Image (cartoon, rainbow, N blue to C red; front, side, top):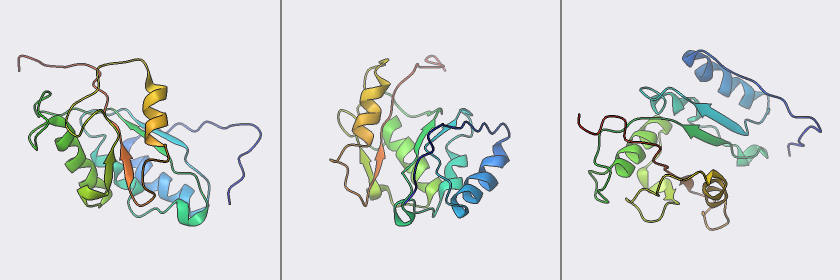
Length: 151
């Protein structure tokens, strides 16, 4: 089981292709990735494939918190399969090679986006709460802003 160092470390990856090589390399060395940020809105979700097949729990490593800033062309106010939460869930599942049923949406309800809020701590707590079954992946969506509302 991984023991956290007394002093933290920060590793910043600047090139998109680096994550696809670097994350699996860290995993092979049993070095934990506790928080990864993908700030490439047009391609961030597709780059999540760097986590495909990595079973952190099996090797005693903490599950990483992954923040992915991205766009969705789907409807903001729909709780149906045409809404942006469903769209993001489909795209993330495809990138990770998972069935959509593996996700546990921790938002207010399956398709309704939480209000924009600075309370990111609450979202993190919900994602890592004991109410998320261990065989599922927590998914939390936060609406930052509507980038092109008249498009």
